[in-house]
Image 1: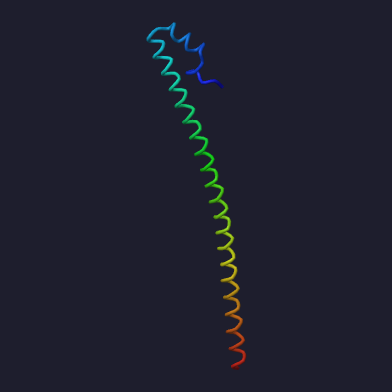
Image 2: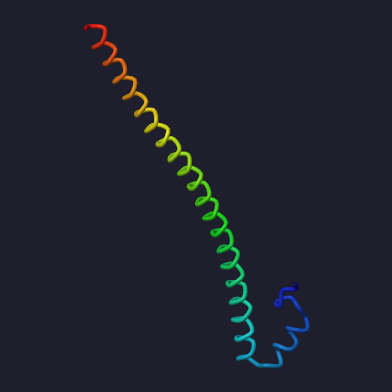
Length: 93
């Protein structure tokens, strides 16, 4: 897309509108430029936030798996301790 500031036809048409038209034209051009920059910034921020959410989700899944594994190991450890204690008691009798 051609930038309206450098388009000769746009400039000719703008001059015919007078001072108010020229001011309005420049305001429009700068407004469009500002909106384009904001839109690009918004797209970049959206992509970055999506990446952060995906990484956090992955980390949370790993953390939950680690916690579940730790709970299983704790239960096994308790079972082993109970089993050893019972064998020690049986061997003392």
